[in-house]
Structure formats: structure tokens, C-alpha cells
Length: 329
Ligand code: UT7
Image (cartoon, protein in one colour):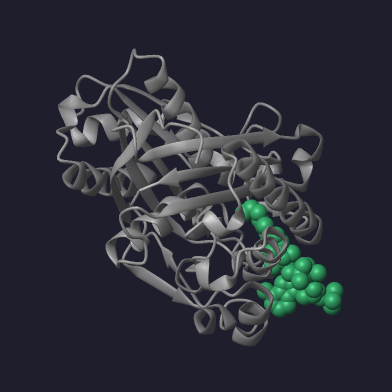
């Protein structure tokens, strides 16, 4: 290993709502089947927020767990970054509501919008902020209530998504553990393939845009699938090159949980056997920016990820955005 880490993850936490929606529940809502969903996506269940639960609630719960593990007090936080496309309101930032809820009175708080890739973008940003020496303790959170943008009559999308949040507390590295390197990329030419067009300045909410269902997630699934495999494979290759590492040196790969077939294809191209790939899509669905930090937290807490392990995380999402990171724990 060549790169010396600048920052390290000192605490993780995650949170999901209590309500579970199974494929069998969905069979009663749209023309679909447990068989189709399982075979085409790998999803069996997903968590769904009840009315009244907002993204900053899940983010704050995940953050408090991460802070507890890190033994960091909220007032010690210098920065809060929330990656989300389903913030509580249009503005202000969901990070500001998290700041208020966890009483992180000394932090600067802001959101970033990079769809599913938001967590890897946030990790990259946190690493750079710590590198600047101006910030010492950074909280990053990927949190979504994607089901607030789901058209429950559209079987192409409504079976895919779930709600949740995952948080990391990041501090300067001890010189051994931490972020070895990250890689992030975007291609705005393909933005139209995965978008929620309504509610912004292009299509402000009105009766007409609601009738046209522009407030919901629109996705060209097959196209997105192709690009996801290509870009996630490229991300694995690039980040390994940057770290001067081989696939054999990766103890655990945590890919974005969008589709089991994307995960398997990425792992195969990367030369990482599925025994070393974390899959939890069956229980969560696609939780966008929350998917990797939820999986990371789960892996740490159930012992799948052990001290000394090197983890490769890789993601793809709307924008298009994609990226990867290698972190030693
Ligand atoms: O997180 C950000 C990135 N997002 C992704 O990476 C998602 C990428 N895309 C995918 O995961 C897959 O494209 C989907 C899971 C969304 C769809 O799977 P697919 O194998 O690409 O299916 P398809 O869209 O090509 O549709 C195949 C058939 C169609 O029927 P016909 O035209 O062949 O008769 C669809 O109407 O499956 C039908 N279909 C369904 N059938 C039962 C689509 N959705 C459903 C459904 N239940 N829920």
C-alpha cells in the first residue's frame, strides 16, 4: 500500500424506519410478482417511512449512533454534510435540520446533491476538508426518503426503492487506518435517464406538472443498468490504480445496492469473488446515498468487517455520477 491516509472513519451508524414492505405487499399494489422482483433485482423487502418521518429524523438517528461509537460529542463537530436528493424541504439544507436535532452548535452544515453517489462524494469532500487542516471533525451522512418520490402505480420503479440513512464520523488519520484514495466522476449528458423532473425551476409544482407525474422518479432502467456496470467497473479499476493495489488486497467490496445483477457483473469484471462482496439489497432495496453507509455500518456491527480490513466502496447514480473509495479500517 503506497498512499498514507489523511482521514479515518472513527464511527458509523445507520437508521431505517420501522415499517417493512415486502414483495408480496407490492403484488397487491401493482402488476408484479415476488419472482420477478427477486430474479431481476435481488430485492425481497425494503423499509418505508411512515407519514411524519422526515429525512433529517433518519439522518439524526444514524448520526447519534456514529457519534456514540466515535466517542465524539455533537458540539465537537466542525462540519455536517448530508448527501440527499430527498431533503426535508427544498431549502434550507437537511444538514441544518440535523445540526438542530443533534445540537451540533459549532458545525457548518450543508447538503450535497449527487444522487446515489452522494456518500462517496461526501467522503471525498470530508477527506479534502481535513487535508486542508481547517476542519478536524466531520460528520457525513447519506440519507433518503426515496419513497416520497415514488409513483406507487409505476411497477418499473416502485418496487426498487427504500428509505434509510447511514452516517460516518471522520477525523484525521492515525497514519495507518483511513481513506487511502477516492475517485469521483460525472456525466451530465445522461442526466435525463434518471431524474425527478418536477418541483424545481424547470417544472415548478402546479396542477399540470402533478397531472404529468413529474414529481416522481423517472428512470430508463435498461440504459441506467448498462452505464452502471460500465462506470462501476471503471471506478474499481481507477481506484485500485490510484492506490497501487490489486483486487486480491481488497478484503471486502461494498457496492451500491441498486440491483444484484449490477453488483455481480461489477464484481466479476473487477476480479473480486462474491464471497468478498457485501450484499444486503434483499432487505433494504435501493436506498440511494444511504446504501453504502448502511451496508458499511451493518458490516462493522455484525463482524463481517474486521479491524485491519481494506474495503473498496463503489457507486453509480443519477447525474450520471459515479465513484469509488478504498478505506483501511
Ligand atoms: O441507483 C441508481 C442506479 N439505478 C440502477 O442502477 C437501476 C438500473 N436498472 C435496473 O436495475 C433494471 O433495469 C430494472 C430492475 C429497473 C429493470 O430490469 P430489466 O431487466 O432491465 O427489465 P426491463 O425494464 O427491461 O423490463 C423487462 C420486462 C418488461 O416487460 P416487457 O416489455 O418485456 O413485456 C417490463 O414491463 O419486465 C417488465 N417489468 C416488470 N414486470 C413485473 C418491469 N417492471 C416490472 C415489475 N414486475 N416490477
